[in-house]
Length: 362
Image 1 (tube, rainbow, N blue to C red):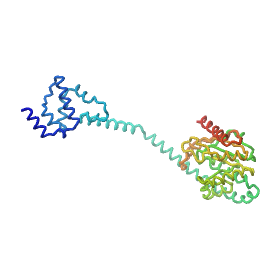
Image 2 (spheres, helix red, strand yellow):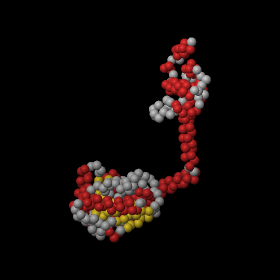
Image 3 (cartoon, rainbow, N blue to C red):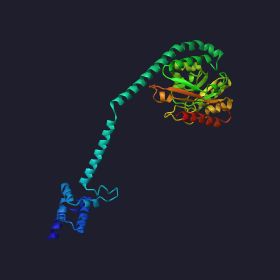
Image 4 (cartoon, rainbow, N blue to C red):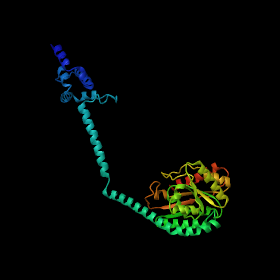
């Protein structure tokens, strides 16, 4: 009689329709109760019928002692962990996880204060206002000073074709008028500079757009290496042409060779040249790899290499954020000149001097 009822129940509720984890739990619970001598008050037929219902399953498991439930959750296999967890317990577990994440987000949201948010917005606004003022001042100064450069250029070209000291004097005045209202520049090691009429190869790290303004205030008649696209800008491009800045097309081997020859010719004629050996501005403030072009020029011409370390410009106007101007100061350290005929040794020594200074200054 009992076997007939069991067969009828099995036909009405096939075994494959029962979830795998509930089948295991039902079998295990029967064996466990038999072993412990416990009576759950549920027949095997009722277990078969009630397994397909969430509420029935919950009642069936709730009638079991808590110590037996721990046996079913003791599996350590991560793939079957959720399969061996009762559905109602898994749902409660997920709810607790959600609650914890909500609490964490609410605590993070509460950590901000209106005062800190307003201070940050005021700081960003102040930097933007300083940036707009900076470009306004430099534009006005350039417009006022381009006239004297244009008038004097024919005479400068005839009498001082290579150094062009007068044009560099105008550029120094322009740079000082631009930076003086916004930040202070300190020079260290001025005694290491060669005499003004001694041709040399100057090199430094490159952190910001402000590096050019900073170096122009030094008052030396060295020729920068600049991208050809900048020469197209009105006033600024004209001034660069009159100063004798050397154009360069990046990723163009022919242009690089012409730039190399032009720099050697300038040094042989008594002028100085300036290189940023990194090739571009540093995005994270760290010193990049030095290219050997500047040091090859120095090795072939016998000119000294004057390494310089620029600090502070990257914080005042970070690379890629040329629209803002933070407060701060700039320091330039001028190192002792280096001489030699090996470009590799000159490159490594110059980079070491700059890197050591950057690490010491933090």
